Each structure stands twice: as structure tokens, then as C-alpha cells.
Length: 107
Image (cartoon, rainbow, N blue to C red; front, top):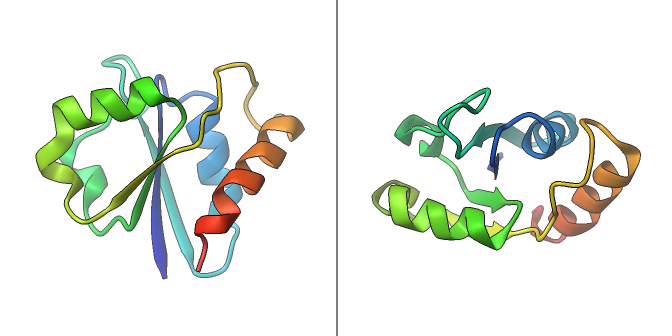
């Protein structure tokens, strides 16, 4: 079982889409959170428990993650997907982009 954590800013569009898509994959447990204080599910230290790979949508997310949660990342890899905030929740183009960029990291 691989555990993925998807992070964006508000946890409203990109990361919840990724969580929904990859939760359907066998042997993957997916969760999501947002870096903003007013995110739907704001990132907390508990989100990192048992996570194998942390996927951030933008380089700015990686920087903020390193700055505020460095001690909680542990052995998890951090992968930047370079997906801008240009998509709606479950938009087919977003799903396709997520599958293309995340698939190489699936065991």
C-alpha cells in the first residue's frame, strides 16, 4: 500500500480532485490538504503520518511546506507536479494531467 498526500492552496479544486482520482486506484491510500489557513482541510502535522509521497501542485507549495512543516515531512518524498490553479474540481483536463504526472511514482 502506498500513501499519497496531495497539497494545494485551498484544498478546493486540485488536491481534492487528486485525492478522489487516486483513492480509486488499488493499493493507494490518498488524502489531501491545503496550505492556506482558510483551506477546506488545512494541513496539520497529522496529515504526514505514514505518508510515502507528498505531491504539491506548485513550487511555491514546496517552499511553504519546507518552511512550515520541515520537521513533519520525515522520510516522505516531496514531488512538485507543476499544475497551476487553472482547473475546476474533477475537470477532465485536470484528471488527465494528474494521472500523467503521478503515474510514474506509483509502484
